[in-house]
Image 1 (cartoon, rainbow, N blue to C red):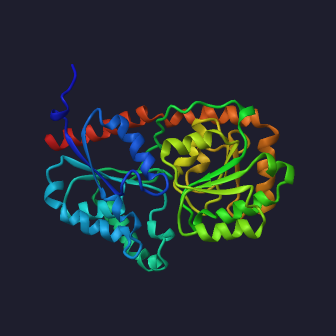
Image 2 (image 1 turned 135 degrees about the horizontal axis):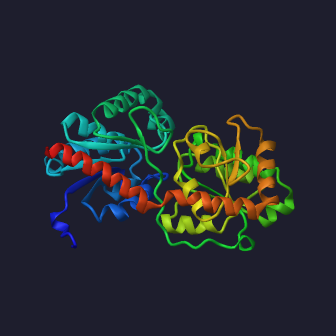
Image 3 (image 1 turned 45 degrees about the vertical axis):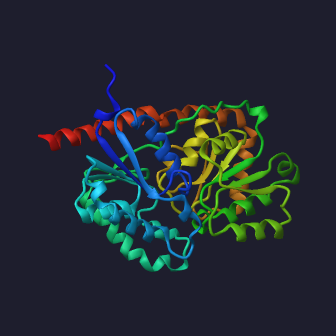
Length: 349
């Protein structure tokens, strides 16, 4: 029998920026998860308005703290909270509201802050992480599973078709344009490829962040304006569509949890080259669906990795597609709902 939406439990979703403006893979993660979570709960998002996206003087994290404290009496009306935000979970902890938290990427989000003074708040965010872990009903992580944190896979939900290998060309990076992603190093490695290879394979960089001007200048200094393109932010469907047309996803992060872009690439049969940081080695198997390089790799090592995949592309692509099946959003959501219902039943008893 179909359940009325009005009788479903009310769940608040905390996300610092809206689904349309969230950085990196958090927005797509939440959107893909909630496609099926909507079948079980009444969901309401608590995020900063998009009008704050262009506010650069005051950090969004601070604005969000103030916003959530102002929503205390509204949040109390919800059975529990699913938070994808350190600030959100910290406020829920302070106010004594029931919540589960999803750790995305690095435990300390200000370690790659867009603001020069972000590093001075690192100890505060370490304290916030400890507080969150102590008070959350369940803590999930998209990175390495550890004591007190349950692994949750990146949910993928799209209808983008897998392209034939012969119709794909080029490489892509997708994510925040911040120093920790080392996108400049990717450009250096790309520049080492033979001219003929670069002519057949442009390198597109999707995303935005504080490194935009630096990367634009670097591309010009290497004379690669026609071959390396900064394409800005794309909505999730457009990004997956763009990834599906490329031969390889290129990553070189100093640290990660598990990037949404890697799960998306594998789901459309696009192999991955990445540093073996965070939980990436659990899903990218070097020599099978991609290649892992050392964190302190040489640019020539990365160039060789690109050429290795291109020389045996069909096999790498097929393996990528098979390995991407584990990120099915419906199955991941079903497992999450089982956890949440267990919490609800426990509280009711």
